[in-house]
Amino acid sequence: MRNADMQDRLFQQLTLNELGRYTTELEQAIEHHVHWLAQINRTLICQLSANADDIGEHPHKLCKFGHWYHGIGSPVLATLEEFRAIGITHRQMHQVARNLLIQHNDHKAIAPLYDELLAQAELLRKQLNHFLHELNQNRNIIARLMSTVFESAREGVMITTPDTTIISVNAAFSEMTGYSEEEVIGKRPSLLRSGRQDDVFYAHMWHELQRFGTWQGEIWNRHREGQDYLEWLSIAAVEDEQGELSHYVAVFSDITAAKENKERLLYLAHYDQLTGLPNRILFSDRLQQAIAHANRNRLQVAVMFLDLDGFKAVNDTLGHHSGDEMLRQVAQRLVACVRATDTVSRFGGDEFTIVIVALEGTDDVVRVAKKITQEVARPYEIDGAMASVTTSIGISFYPADGKEASQLIQYADNAMYHAKRHGKNHHEFYGEI
Image (tube, rainbow, N blue to C red; front, top):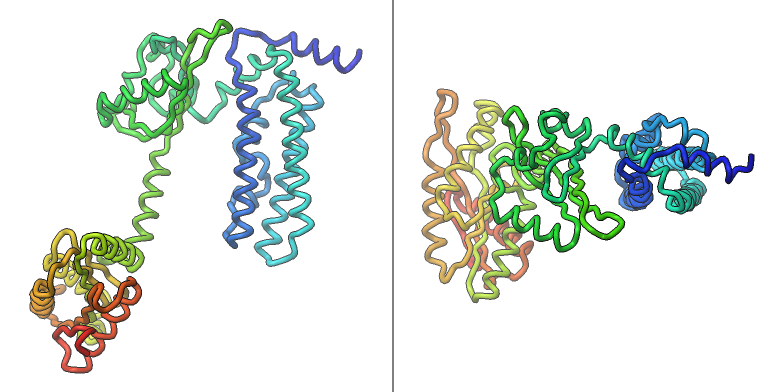
């Protein structure tokens, strides 16, 4: 039997009654591996650590396409030479990438492996495109394969009629929402609403969906047991052969943990873990914003640089735990001395910085500096013991002393050291030293 005849016969074994998302999987595989290759390039160029999945034992099974490809288990596909060739190339490409990243981590030459990776990636792209072309010639194969994808997908999938009546969900939907298929068939997606989004949100979503045929974004929904979860939701309108709306298909994944991790990492990158104050990175950003605002409105900005006098003695006498507690209390007192629009930062160690924004004169800064000096000097009760410190403060002004954030911080630091050398426990202006 000729190869083409055999393929025609195989294609005819598949039904037309199931959803045709197989082509989408292959198209997404191409897009996914473009982004994946870009990430490999970024890892190499920026000297980043390799993704653990990319240097594991079987990296070709860990990407989204590999998970789908090796999870289908279709005897029909197993007989298709082109499909097997895609799997071989996909495995070889990931293996080359693995070896490349290991060589990169070991600071060894990577040029030959990099060229091989590009060649394998190009070959995979061509194979996928060719296979897509073959499938589009006969849509019978799409339906059978996408039935498997629908059930094996890690994303939740929900299919509705044009009036949003649910007619089908997959296993991942039930796992993520807590609702079985029997509980949701014939119902509306609104049974998942958490109440966190208002009617305006949903009106906008449906407006976009009706206008463009697709919508995607973050949305809070509620699990059957009552807890809210954040999901990334994509909705697509499906048309029949006459171009009329026939279904909506919604695909979603639970991103609650990922969102929390992202927010936690963002917090750690910009805030001091001990005091909860902004760190020097966030302080510098806030100062730059304050300078830009002052420049537009012809105002002044003051930068204070504070260092605690006698803090080392507290650490040496009472221990680092007590020293940490004192820093937390100092931070609270400093925040209480300024306005909500100002920023107090722990710059490092026992050093703090403050930006006083939107000033019309210097009198307010003098008042704040004196108040800080008094508040910091009040005794501290720490684990039943009493301790005391004072503070030396240096102050610089925008635009009188400088126009760059780094300049103003350095000048305030210089003034602070001048205050330390001349008696401590007071403030000095950079313009007067």
